[in-house]
Length: 90
Image (tube, rainbow, N blue to C red; front, side, top):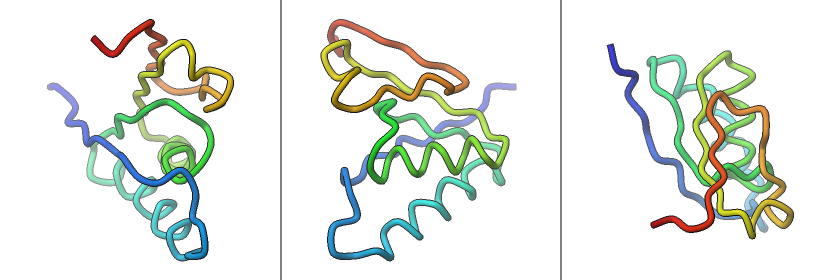
């Protein structure tokens, strides 16, 4: 059976709304509860990174795709279930 995926795309930081961190954590924990996996930009920072960490901590599969030039600034999350580094998104 093919695992369903959901694309996660959100802001790079919570800014002046700390509730966004709470919601990102809840989303990350909830995705594996329904048997899905998050697919996102593979960074380990910001709200997307928090969502992926939470899914990982909930024993969920995680899938990230990151362009080479973003490895350092986005702190590529190397402990994902599937981690792809590519030159371009094409």
